[in-house]
Image 1 (cartoon, rainbow, N blue to C red):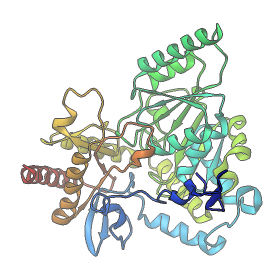
Image 2: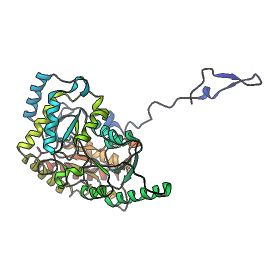
Image 3: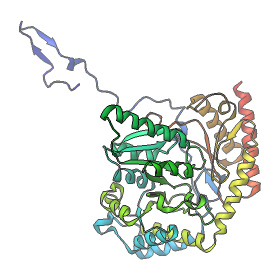
Image 4: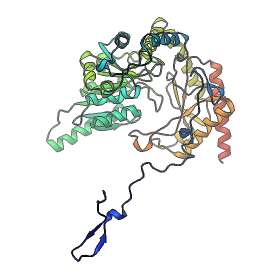
Length: 446
């Protein structure tokens, strides 16, 4: 309630009484939190080196299994040199949105190169990976539309769905049958309400590789359902681009799915390509609309030119030598095989995923139908990460969530990232550290 300007008013008996305004206190600007629970977020480790295979954390060199440098290109001398040359020519930033003198030739060249690589008509480049996904969805989906989304979709997708104001319907993770049931249930609901099914624009939003689980989308089965019901298909390939497929072209190449079946591909350039920003790919008709309606595109300064060049150079390196992707995939599979031997942690990720999601094994293998977020388990896993950093000098991290704002079904997990510069020996070292730490900390908690 808003307090009145005058804290006292007279009643009909001329007696002065207090209003509710005198008792009113505003809600706290921020909620109370447990400093111990969030100490790793409020007091982050300080990095003083390049985020390559090794990383300097608080003055100590550690094996880096924490950053999303899938192909190991983050400290590539070739990328560094092209970035330096570009800074000397263009400066450090564009200082303007694309439609306000922020479009440079390097943006157009990157968009053309990405379109050729994916064999699509057109792409559009954004200056921030998160806003690429969060802006693209509401550029098309509106309040009168329906969006079906996987229950494990990442936070950028969730924010895009919220911004669209569409009716959001969640289906079980990677479950085409449950999606079919949800579609049929909606049809029945419409018949009861309107006497017939209504023609409503409908979207299906999924990920190529899911950030929350590290597994691959069951796109073939979901695509069959989408085509049968004439649903628009959007895929976030931020973690599958540059990783899946023989040439790193993503899940469509990996599963041999016709690109014409996909209405929009959304990608962050911040993972496999070790750049910044993101892009969307599809037909010219679809992509051009984002230049008019994608808020992150229209109202943010364009991607710094040197980041464009870095992304271009990364893409050229993959095209010139596809074995970069193949060697990385071999390492991902080896890591998956080793991590699956852990006795107290369970690896729930796909062998080809660079993201290895580890959860408490006894709990995940129980009869619980759906995983839930348990703070006690999260604290145990957090202790494992801290212990391995301190004792073994290996950097891994927890999966983080904004619990009160999540539309998905998060669960406590370690998120370990494999990069192509690692060796089989590095993977064995990570396995040994996880096995030791999970055993010692389990005993200390008894």
